Image (cartoon, rainbow, N blue to C red; front, top):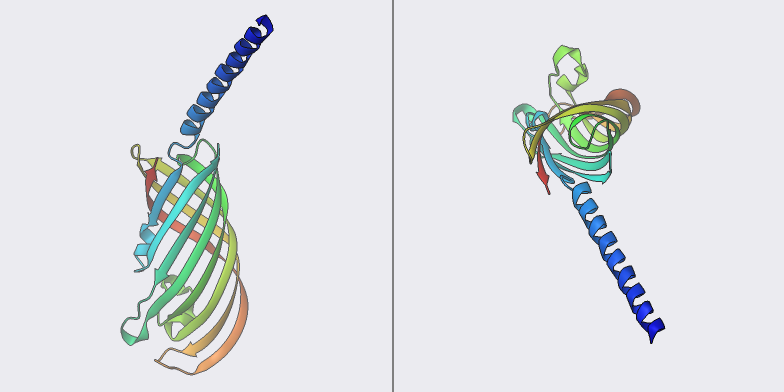
Length: 203
């Protein structure tokens, strides 16, 4: 009887200890997942009439991973277009804590595009002014950025990325149904990210 009573007390102690551990783990999980999901959109991307949205999630004390998508379906006068679909996964390491301050990371992009009759400033991509390009692009790059907290649920973020990409495209004269003049694969040193984003946090 005494042995049985001692065993019950031991079981109660184990149960109480287990409950305490579970409570501590739950409290830790609550703290670790605070501001764990961020929804974002890039204002610079909207300036090109491109729909875009992204999500980012905290996966470790100083690491987040995210995915951004963009879509532009428009054709303007004179067959001017910046049609494309873009997918961008990204991983970030935050120097202080996630979603606040400086971060570094790496991203990749894939895009299917159909662009042409665009006068890009400073003589960048001069052929876009009188040709249309249709093809696929893949790239990887390194990213640096900074996030300014505006409150519990909002922040503004600026980010830039540079890397190497490869594209395979067909080149056409700029007119509607213009004739094909080239079919080419090209390697590029290129920006992989340029963003000023508004961010909303889900807790």
